[in-house]
Image (cartoon, rainbow, N blue to C red):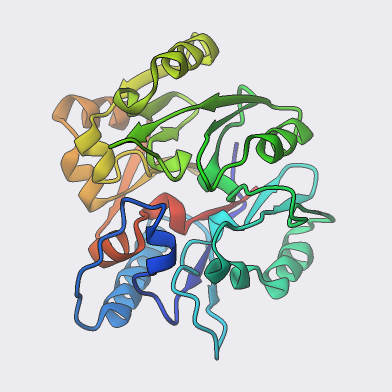
Length: 291
C-alpha cells in the first residue's frame, strides 16, 4: 500500500527509560556520553538519507518543556488507514502516555485529509500501535504477539474494525514475551522476515496456517532478531519500492538473504546505534506511515 509520507518526531530528551525496560529486553542500560546529542545526529542523518532517496518524510519537533525519552517512536501511539481513519492507541507505561499530540493529529487532518479519529485510550486494554500489530494490508491480516503491551481483546477489536483478520501468536525469549510484534517480524508485500525460533509450537502452527501461500517467508535467527533484523519497514512510494533497515540489521543478514531482498526492493540502511541500544527499537519504531 503506497504511502503519502512517513512521519518522524525529532527527540528532545531521548535516553534510556528504566520503566519501559522492564518489558523490553532489547534496551541496554549502558552509559553513552552525550546520548541525547548522538541520538539527534543519528535522527537527522536518518531523515537526510530518506529525503536523498526521495522518500517523503514529515518531521515534527519534540514538544518543549517535556521529558519524553521515547517520543522518537511515534508509531506506537497512532496509525493511519485508508478512508481517512486515524487510530490512537493506549500506551502501557505512564512515561509514554504524554507522547500523544493533538497538534500532530490536527496536522494529519489538515494536511492529509483524515476525518475520523478512533481513540482507544478508554482503559479497556493496551495496544501499542504498529509495534503491537504488524499489518499485512494486501491480505488484510493483523499479526500480534501477546505481551503486557498487547492485550488480546482490544487488539482484536482494532484489527477487526478494519475488516482484517487477527493472527495472535505467542513468542518469547528467555521465558519472557517478545515486547512488540514488530521486532520479531517484518512484513513486505512480497515476503516476510520472521524469527520462527521464538514461536511456541502452537503459534508456529497458527502462523503457518494463516500465512498466504504466495508470501515468501525468510526466517531470521534469534541473533539477527536481537540486532533488529525484524524491525524493518517496507515502503512503497510513487516512484519506487524500498525496505528501510538499520546498518546493524543489514550487517546481520546473510548474503543470500540480502540478495533475495534486493530482488524485490531497494535497501535503505541507516546507522542508529545509540537509538537502538538505549531505546530498544530500530528504524521501524521510528517511522509512522501516512497512507
